Length: 197
Image 1 (cartoon, rainbow, N blue to C red):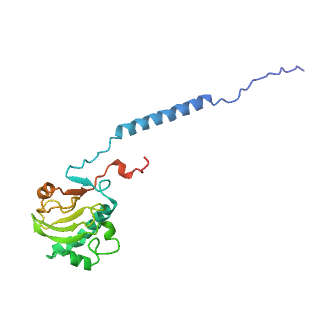
Image 2: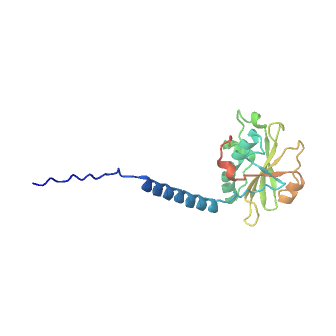
Image 3: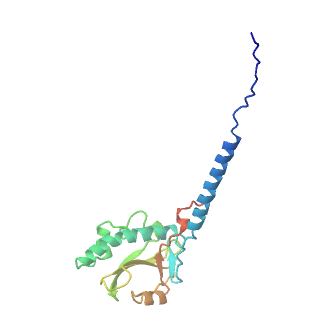
């Protein structure tokens, strides 16, 4: 009988270094490509400039003026409907319908105590003027609505903080010359950011 020779084989543990390195490199390549694509597609946000004769509704108005501006823009829908049917509602009629800001309520005095009047139609526009009783709270406001399709502007709200705000007419030129400023809403990237950013 012959004795068999024992052979020993050294088995090394399976190494994952190479596979781990390949996975890490692949992840880095994906991140690099994604970052490059995002960087190339991102552009600076367009910031709409406000003209000298305009005022931004977000940061140029007092709290009372912001509320009055919002109320006037909502009321403009009902007023425009009446204009289309051929009638021009007076501030008294709008107050009877309890339509803010024409209706007198508990908040009226705290928002400037405006006295509303109908402005004679001019340059294809109808207007409702609210003269302030408390200029330090809110300025005088004008709701202007186009009565003809040819008139530019549709619905606009104008502000004048002067105590003796003159209203020589309803065209842009005459309002600007008299010191009125159109209230506009400017939107940019900061609209969606928090105050702390």
